[in-house]
Amino acid sequence: MTEADKNFIETCKEIIEHGYASEGTNVRTRWDDGSEANYYSIIGVSNKYDVGKEFPMITLRNNTKTVIRAIDEILWIWQKKSNNVHDLNSHIWDQWADETGSIGKAYGYQMARKYEFKTKQGLQVMDQVDYVLNLLKNDTSSRRIMTNIFVHDELKDMALEPCAFGTQWLVKEGKLHLILNQRSQDMLAANGWNVMQYAALQYMFAQVSGLEVGTLTHNIGDAHIYDRHIPLVEKLIAAEPMNVSPKLIIKNPTKNFYDFKVEDFEVEGYQYNENIKLGKIPVAI
Image (cartoon, rainbow, N blue to C red; front, side, top):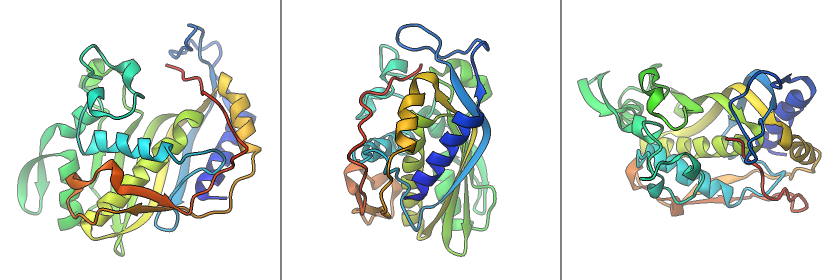
């Protein structure tokens, strides 16, 4: 099994066996029929992936197309710095968009905001993405290569407060390591998605900075499984994982982060359990 399989299975088992039940706590989330979307959750999960060794893909179900959609979303946020669903190829954000396609001052909007940063070249005005890229090339020993999009004074203007809200980038012995901080995670719908897209971003940043890819540490504040997802998750964690080691291939040799396109990516060495078919997964909103 892959590291992604192992971490997913262990986390889901812990939630099902020892998780806190949300029933009776007046949860915000609802199913399409208007009923409460309750869940079981655990607090403070930290999963690590050696991304340079193996691209983190779950083999318990088919993620062949999912990985490309996940990369498309991460480019939408970090490269296009967009908060408009018309700039995104998938429809995963449509339910939170207004009549113009905007999701408010969230995600890409925050990545595009410019700040005055201290750098070795002096004070520079740039956004958080360019700040990270600058330090990865010019100040690799820094422990301050960080981003944050959970901006309190603008939460009221966001259709959905950021789930994956913060990153820290660290360079050690020529390898680029990433810490991803996430306040909340729907394990079935989003765990594999977030891990794959940030691992792909790590690959891109390493390539343009002349670094090798290191580890990805994924910290989750509240990791949960919704009540209607429990049977699906139990089906997954009982399935047979594949003995493979996927690799992400970037066909574009560019050193400019803004040149990457979604068609530049493909995965080699990936197989999945073809016997597992979950059908359409209900999404709580």
